[in-house]
Length: 141
Image 1 (cartoon, rainbow, N blue to C red):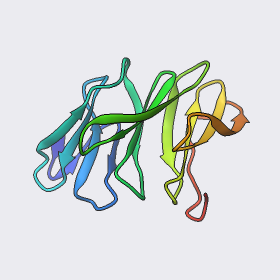
Image 2 (image 1 turned 120 degrees about the horizontal axis):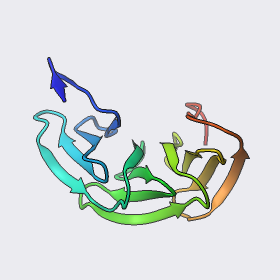
Image 3 (image 1 turned 30 degrees about the horizontal axis):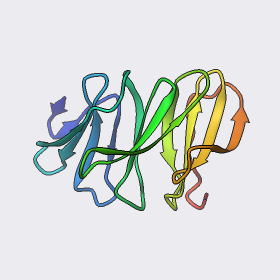
Image 4 (image 1 turned 120 degrees about the vertical axis):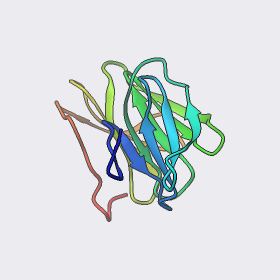
């Protein structure tokens, strides 16, 4: 929804160059919008369930978007899946890239926080607990 120049969505993130905005579409999609015109540039339809979080890589052309038990890393310029990461139990929320763009962290409800290298599909660190959100330190890797 756009109100007085303000784009409102329950899930959105800006590209590092501020030219694009990724917005959760109708449930299972992510729309890439022009920040200038808000015209849809691309729609990613790779999720099988409602998207629960998304984040644009600070260092490259990738977005991580999450749903239930899977996080997808995909290229928004062509709309193609690069890799995916799966949790064994509950849904992912709040995916976040590390400041250097090499790692991703996401909360799996009632399971804990997963941290993995974006180039790999396995957990490098796991913190058990009941978390709802997370954030990297600006100096964190």
